[in-house]
Every structure is written in structure tokens, then in C-alpha cells.
Image (cartoon, rainbow, N blue to C red; front, side, top):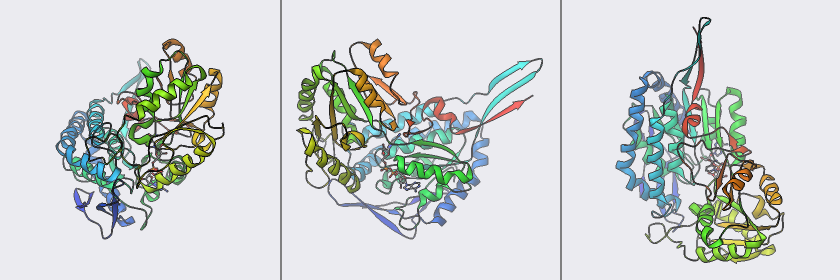
Length: 468
Ligand code: NAD
């Protein structure tokens, strides 16, 4: 059983109390994480604040090199962290599971480290020179969810450090252990206090809320639900914190009648069911033209039957259980409702423990909760349309706007439709793939700001203009 410490000011801190972390595949205890108090948080923030001036003052090339070196620190511990991730989150080691997540974490770290923060000359003439500089903000507080805990931790930590900030991260209480491990590995290569982690199940103190209002934290980067994101924004108001909020999605995919159902089935499937659907930018509603609706349903069912779900430690598994009881109950409730009013093509009832079979439901009424709420699990509604205008309108009717996709052989037509989707990312003939060079984030209720690439890095900076 794992008993891990928090990293605060370069030291491993066990804390006076702990909370248990369970394996969703078996219900067994995986380990214990420290249950931080406000004192622990304050010590972590004070350490980050004290470490900030020296870290921010490093020559940029040196900070870039220190960030690039983090790839090796993750790599040296990748097998152990992937194993912990499978145990606490349920995702398999294999497929697009824990090893894939660690691979992504390293790729994002390397790319982010390589980004430049150039001084931009806005004017240089006989009236004077105007330069735009990008300076670090100070202490960045990171709050992460349980679905891709290691990857999202990296998405928060590395751009913040690269830009010269110091960091305090708080992972989800469902998946704290892999974050404790990855932060310990990274922090060991950095000056004390530059990177800190506190874990909490929010029973002693609400650490996320305290971070959001902390006077010594200059920016919060938060990934999680829309409801909690709105709370973070409210508590951040009094201290005017900079915010990046990556929130929920209800992405629509729209399949035009010129598609070949057999050809697209596998990509459609993984667009929706990556990480068991517990992915912010997974396809959560699938609109299919009536001409090929039934053939697409058949092709999806046939592909889904080939996908092995099981304990993530089994190399044959490519999907695991739902990651926790809270989410399992939510998915169960949405599917129980859908079973009453729709046509169940596959699945439809919970399995043993927290396993929930891949569920495909067609012909639901327009107002079905499975269509309108973020299911964040292995259940997909398939909706028939005859006029693509109806499908675009339905896709945009959501208050969310994270991603969307258009599927067609006619790329120009697909592009024109994709540009009409109200979302931060639109894919053509795929869904959900992310890339460290491409800014990612949500429109409407799906968040504020962007991560990745230059735009993501810039969100970790404060602009200062020099008039010379
Ligand atoms: P959640 O909102 O329940 O929790 C997220 C984090 O916030 C956790 O660490 C939690 O402990 C913390 N928290 C709880 N109360 C808080 C408070 N009052 N103030 C500050 N922090 C608090 O979300 P979740 O269930 O862990 O994650 C699933 C959600 O995250 C889904 O909606 C999903 O779409 C979204 N998500 C979005 C992205 C994206 O990039 N847009 C990526 C992954 C997940």
C-alpha cells in the first residue's frame, strides 16, 4: 500500500491526517494521501512565494533547460506512476490508458519547455521605442480533476514554471497519488519551493476554495466541472486573480450522409469512449444523417463488441471501470432514464462493481437528459437528423462549447460547417485529439482562456510595456 508525502518547500511532508484512496476496479485500498490543513496550504504558498524571485530571475535559457530536464525526471519514474494511475483511476495500463497518459505528459513537457518568450517591439522610430515584455505572475495555484490527473497536472505546471512562476498544485481527492509521485519526481530536480503539492479530501479544510481566495496566489488554473469553476471565479474576485478555467463539455459530432459507416466507426468510437468517456473533449452527442443512421449504429455496435473492458492491470483491457462511485451513480441515473425512452443498441445496465458496459442509445426524445447533460462516462446518445441545419442548431444549443466535429468526405463543406460550431476546437473526421502546439479551451460555459502553445504560455504571464 502506498503512503506518500506532499512536497512542500522541497521536503516530503506526511501531514497529521490522511485519507484513503481506493481502486475502482476492485474496491481495494490503494494507498493513503495526506489530508492537508490550511496551515499546510499556507506553508506551501509561502515556500512558493519565497522561491519565486530567484526562479523568475533565472536567465530565460536556463529556465528553459530546467523545464526540458523535467522530461527525464518523469521518464525515470514513468512505469511506477503509470501503475499508480491505473490503481487509483482505473484506466488500463494499455491502450489509451496510463502509459499513453505518461507519454503525453512527457511530450507536453518537452514542447512547452521549448517555447520562447520573446520581447515584442511595438514601435521603434524617432518618436521612441515601445517594447512588450512578458513577466511571470508569481505563485500559480493549480487545481486538477480525476480523469487525466497526470496529464492535466503537467498542462498546468510546466507552462507556469516555464514562464517563471512557482506552483502549488492540489489534485482531486479521487486521484492524489499519481500527482504526489509525479510532483516529487519533478520537484527533486528544481530549487526547493518552486513546485509544491498539497492533497486533501476537503473534510478538514476546503483547500481548493482556500487557494482560490488566497492573497499570495496570483493566478489559478483550474480544470474541472462548470459548477466548481464558477465557484473558483467567485472566490478569486476579491484578489483579482488571473484565471484559466478548463471546464465541462457536451461535444457534438455531426456525421454527414456521404460518410462510409464502416470506415468511420473506429474513430467515432474512440472519439466518444476514450478513457471510458471520462474526457472533457470526448464526443458526448452523436448526430447522424438519417440516410446512414442505422448503418452507423450497426458499425458502432460491431466495433464496440470488440473492445475489452476489465481490470486495468490486465494487458488485454483497453477500458476500465468508471473511476469513482460518484461518477458511476451519475452515469447510471442518466442511462436508466435513457433506457425508458430510447432504443438501447448496446449495454444499458450497470455491471459488477464500478464497471459500466459501453452503452449506445438511439431515438431518444429531444429533451432527454443523456443528450443535454454531460454524462462523462461510457454512454453515447445517437441522434437522427435529416437537415444539417437542424444538427448545427442542436449542437450549438448547448451552454457548453468545448469541442465539436464534422464527419464528411467533402473537406471544404466540413470546414464551412465546423467554423459554425460554437466551440473552442472543432475537428474534421476525428474527435478529441489534442496537440501541444494547438491552443485548447472552451467557449461559453466551458471555460475561460486557453492552454497549450504560445497562447497557453502567455496566460501564465503579465504584460509589461516599456516606453523608452
Ligand atoms: P470537480 O469540479 O468536481 O473537481 C475539480 C477539482 O476542484 C478537484 O480537485 C476538487 O477537489 C476541486 N474543488 C472542489 N471544490 C472546490 C472549490 N469550492 N473551489 C476550488 N476547487 C474545488 O470536477 P471533477 O469531477 O474532478 O472533473 C470532471 C469535470 O472536469 C468534467 O466536467 C470535465 O468535463 C471537466 N474537465 C474539463 C477539462 C478541460 O480541459 N476543459 C479537462 C478535464 C476535465
